[in-house]
Image (cartoon, rainbow, N blue to C red):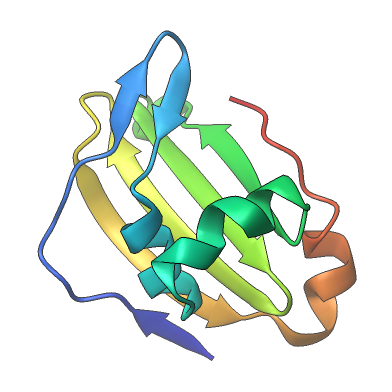
Length: 104
């Protein structure tokens, strides 16, 4: 099941080749408390994947966060403006999701 995240559009910081995403935004998308985001990223129970758009999507980035069976995606433009957000229960795909690593 996929659900749209409907809070007001926000920004993602992009500095020196790295993205900075507010823990509150990630927490909302994954349905957890904001204070749990950093510790779970450190222990590897939240992983992420960054993909750079090509062709028609050039100048856009898709940031995906995985936690258990949950996937939270943010699509941003080159300025860091959030264009789209969505969350989904990926169910049995959790084994694959937990092995994701950042690529941007």
